[in-house]
Image 1 (cartoon, rainbow, N blue to C red):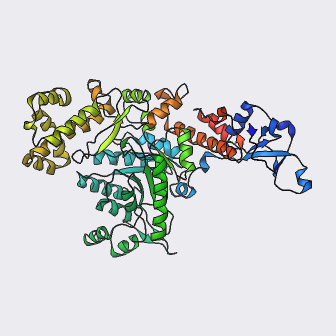
Image 2: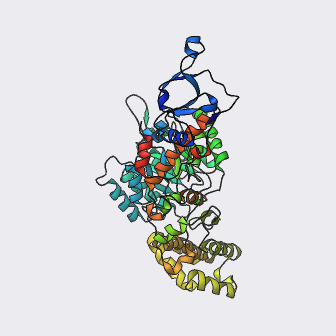
Image 3: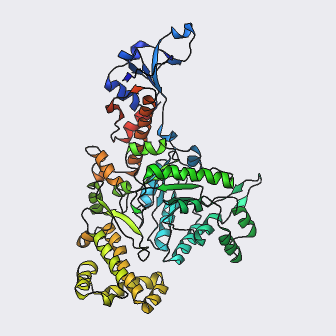
Amino acid sequence: MEKSASSASSARWIGNDKELRTGVTAFKEAVANVGRPVFVVGPSDASAVTHNGTMIWGSAPDIVLQGRPLLGFAPPVQPMNLGDPLFKRDLSIRYAYVIGAMANGITSVEMVRAAGEAGMIGFFGAGGLSLGQIESAIDRLTSGRDGVPFGFNLIHSPNDPQLEEAVVNLYLRKKIRLVSASAYLGLTLSLVYYRIKGIHQAQDGHIVCPNHIVAKVSRIEVASKFFAPPPEKFLKTLVEQGRITEREALLAERIPLAQDLTAEADSGGHTDNRPALTMLPTFMALRDEAMQRYRFPSPLRVGLGGGIATPDSAAAAFAMGAAYVLTGSINQACVEADTSDAVREMLAQAQQADVIMAPSADMFEMGVKVQVLKRGTMFAMRAARLYELYRTYDRYEQIPDTVRATVEKDFLQASFEEAWGQTRQFFEQRDRVQIDRAERDPKHKMALVFRSYLGRASLWAKSGDPARKIDYQIWCGPAMGAFNAWAKGSILEPPQNRHVATIGMNLLYGAAGLMRCNWLRSQGIIVPSQAAVFRPMEPAEIQRRTSC
């Protein structure tokens, strides 16, 4: 709690000396009560802290002679004040904290609801689900829960554009006004249609766009498309199809496809493993260039996801200027996640190096990869082997006999023809075109069977099938290991104690405290290392420490 010699101050503190406290414990408590200001009062060789008093700056003799030297000051930093105020206003939330969508409904109705009730926002994990399952989730979230904010995921489906279009039509019919657009390699007609359907001009002249997209991307070339007006070719096609009017197309030229964009760093699932420290500033520079080029009526915003797992990472994101933070992997181990207890236990044991890239089920033929848990499962190795075989051979029958025997015995646990029968049955309900193509193209048939293994591997994990534990596909980034290290020995170490709102509040509260520590350091205060450690605590204790 010392003051460095190079940072003398002419500021003074006036207050009751009896309220001054000294020592590391006093300093830690003062910083931790983020709802109250912190005064660090001299002299420098015996500095003390307090929450109360009056600051005076000046050089007049009658001012300098009053009170004690003020060595440093940190204002209150409430968790609800972190992030972009307009982002919070537009999404009707108190905290700039987003629960990312995890496919197969792992980001469940219960998780989304818990986030909304806590003043955060969650996106239901619609990827991989049928239309009926998605509609059921919509009905559950909209029945009797007025005022609780929520969103739904819209995932890019290059192998099934009809499904993507059907999901968009469902969202429009059900008046889902907020979606998280993820895994997009480029724009699609369905995505553009969702954004601009219903756009109109209010009486005061401003443009009203009822459908809001929060894009999640990791490539600058994709981000630039979201931070631009919808492409003219798509608008022209939609007008020709009679799906939008000429007026809607004209208004669409004046808005961005997405006002909010999440810079997705090294995350679980679909990711390019980008470093957050370079990605976020690059995307914010793109934001500024887009605003200057297009002169949008409302500001563009950039949040950060991928690696957000501790108060330190959340504080770093906000310090760099993130409008909000997004968490993913760490929520999968929470009680609200629609996954198995076996998966929760595996995730709770993960360390930062226990992740690996593996071929994705939805973009298998394209060679796109997802980040998954490596520890306790052979999925990544087996999925990579299947992709290698797909790349090497034009039909399944060309694969050497010994290799085919291993694939059928250990991977598929069925003959290839039996596996094709199961796959065919799936696509008879989902997309009959894929069956017709497979009957004509043996390589595509092989791809569909191999994709079925990858797709079912995530469902085996979700259901906790003990017979297929070695094949679990668990989407996970290194954030999971960082979270576990931070939570070790605390109330959040056992998976059964992990609730999304409790985790979110701990990250935001700790970030607020760390920002106060950095504020004091910037004034030359030597902050005790113990004061900059914010361990997980109960929500009631956070409430106490954030009170004014």
